[in-house]
Image 1: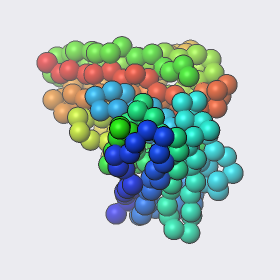
Image 2: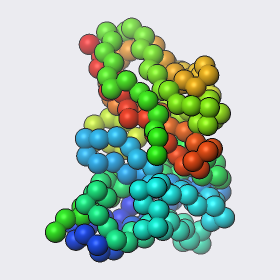
Image 3: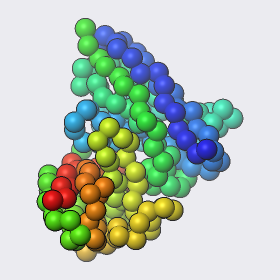
Image 4: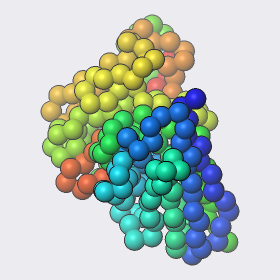
Length: 121
Length: 110
């Protein structure tokens, strides 16, 4: 079955760190770029970061640049998001999405169910 | 980072046609076109179309996408109750080197 399963979401205090994971199955993971997209409940979608098929290109939204790091392990069919210096405004449901091609300019065509990150003291 | 502009809500009658709009600029929609995603309450987004009018497998032909200048369109014909959802456009901004999303349009089928 083609699917993406996110994990790692939690309640954390401001300033702390968290690492999200996304396990992919059912497709050739290293053929495709991957994205992290977040959504505050009841609000719209916000692109967070993307990584190309071979990790040669990564991109970040200005709101997370310098604090978040995206990475992937093609041998493990896994995508990661290291989130440091978390802020209250990072509170959201974080989705992992498979891109429709190998570059981060391609849209997400397969989405996981999301993992919730809550930043609060 | 500047996003794409979508009307917050659209209401149409059952079996009618709805056309949703998404306006950007020459660095995003005008250059790359737009992808369209559908999201039902409590569910992840689902890709409806990308790169012009390419539909992923399983997406109904009732959904069609087009573009004119810096505005992208999603047309949904023969509206059904299950089409009631939030619709987002997205694309790559070649100037900012980021993916950008529209704020979403809530489609109500009357």
